[in-house]
Image (cartoon, rainbow, N blue to C red):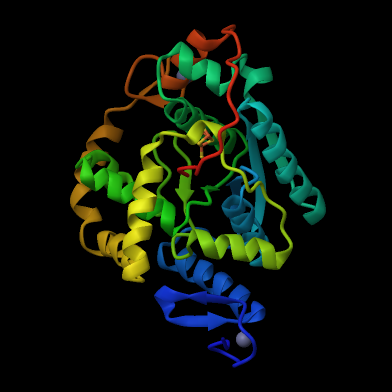
Length: 315
Ligand code: Q46
Ligand code: ZN
Ligand code: ZN
């Protein structure tokens, strides 16, 4: 197996590119793909203050590392979600990376700062854990970005994540979600700008990137992900990709090029109708935002004991 660029020994094959790469040229490929994505979708200006949503997993640490190497002024934000040992361990990976790199990591702890954790919160509002978790993460990242004066929030969603979400939204024709599934969401009505610079890179590449860069990340998946539909969507797409390399890329980038615009009106109408939350001032479609309703009902609820199942995380 030889590197496509230098013909030296390759460390990874990327079937959708029909090519192998040595360490040096694979790392360069990752940087080039991120640079290309940032430029193509006008994601981050050179002087922007960037806030990276860091989970301690491979994708968020890789995107933070790539942005720092590319010279961006990028701080990290870690949210402690109170998901048993998983949160403690993942938080430690985020802290260790920040310390090793001399980067700034902002930490917000849901149990100590808001009085509930995700398992208890989900139970209190009778939502699936990932639903309660997702809305909490969105709310707290938006708030931290607005409070901290950041220009843009970065998340580590990769091509596998985006293709799986698109697959699920298409299967159910969730047109409002389809209209929102862009790699860039502009700042508007109290929401910060949000971008996904890893959409040209896959899950396997991000794991390889971390290994080759010597970045330690949490390998085990969140114990609350079991039963999440995205796991099934990823597995279905992986089966297709195995026989038709490049299908995920074509599916997602074809959607962006030929279909995404058609769903924009659903999002515009929804965003124009937003109010300010009566409790916290965040943009919301109801009098009180979903996060405030969740925290009001969950605060004081007993922590939920969890079993330590390990499954694939959806995001
Ligand atoms: S952390 Fe939260 Fe994920 Fe765990 S509870 Fe679900 S959404 S799986 S990325
Ligand atoms: Zn090479
Ligand atoms: Zn609120």
